[in-house]
Image 1 (tube, rainbow, N blue to C red):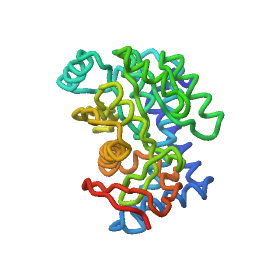
Image 2: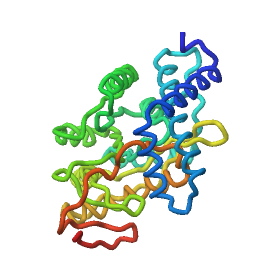
Image 3: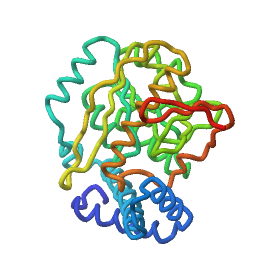
Image 4: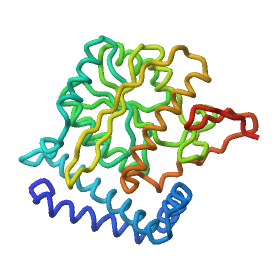
Length: 292
């Protein structure tokens, strides 16, 4: 039923769902407001509230879009995604080097649409942490599977991921969630230490595959794929080097989120893991310091 609805009706239903969740989930609403206020200290309270509201509305629209895609509408919404041909030519040149590609992305707008769109061109594997609630995570895994996308968790699958990229697959990393202390390094995200898994940098260094930041953004009411310049592999596998490259990746994500703040999952506690005394923390300007 959802698939045969006009897209405008589907979007309005999704937005209504987002407004309902905005009203019901007071704890997550307050967390999002607090994170936005701290990340954009020059904003007034009204702008923080309006952006938080837009975050929930966007998440509701996201659910509606995924349902619509899963329902196999007569015209796929993926057909309406814009991209620049020169960006695709640049990406094809990267793939022609024979090292595969590591795609960096984030929970910005509809990341499932992005993966499904990319799977039209190349074998696609997505590496992502499970999301909550588990029922929603199971549903998203089912949708991804039906779209021909392999999904692997961050933990315990490094060898599988390495084999995939060495086999010229495209590996997508959703790299904007909190990591536990023993598995992460501390980089700056909105001027705050954020524990982040350095596995993407390690894979790039070991495989020789560059990291290509790719995001799906809204442009005048439509989705458009934005492909950034590739980031070359780290020159070595030293932990400090991997941390510095993880900072570079995180900085690209921050730039995207700053451009469209309403697109990101501010209700996620990105800064939950706190640094301990002696932890190395990088800054966006390339410098670093030790936490006291």
